[in-house]
Length: 240
Image (tube, rainbow, N blue to C red):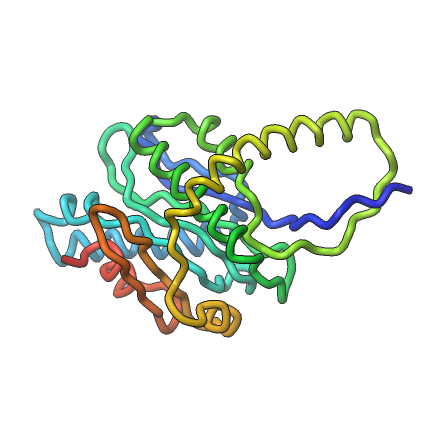
């Protein structure tokens, strides 16, 4: 019996609209989580239209990319990821999300370098999906190669398998290539201020949101009390 090394089995999912596609798309996000997340985002988009009937599109598309750590009702487990404005091929606006779900209850986030590498890769995937109009499969390959931002779980025992080993080696080679780019980009990712790990570990009915500084926007941070709602959405996408 072979014992594999420590490896976090978090699920990295994505969901939203892409400029290369005329409809919603996503991979690896559970039905329950998709329903919860989509209900919030749709309500938020409705709120933008209600509060600014003519100017909301410009406000929305110029909103920054937000990183977040939250606990979702669908699983009760923490999620971490990136959320940014996007649109489909015919110009219908809707955010694009990349998020990782904890592989098990009580799972802690990995070290700063791993978290930053994941967030950098998530951000780059979203940016490229919007600017380079990545296809669904191209975006999914990028997202599927992201490193886990969670601590590794127990070693997994399995029977030896030559095919499994070959596929694993190919996957690891691809991930290693992508990880070099993620590590380089991670230098430009700023984590939340203060003892953010303590705050993240104690999140119940809260979510932590922040913007890593760029040449266009400065650092922003928001700790939201309660479930994700319309007010939160307007704070993320309708700030002036």
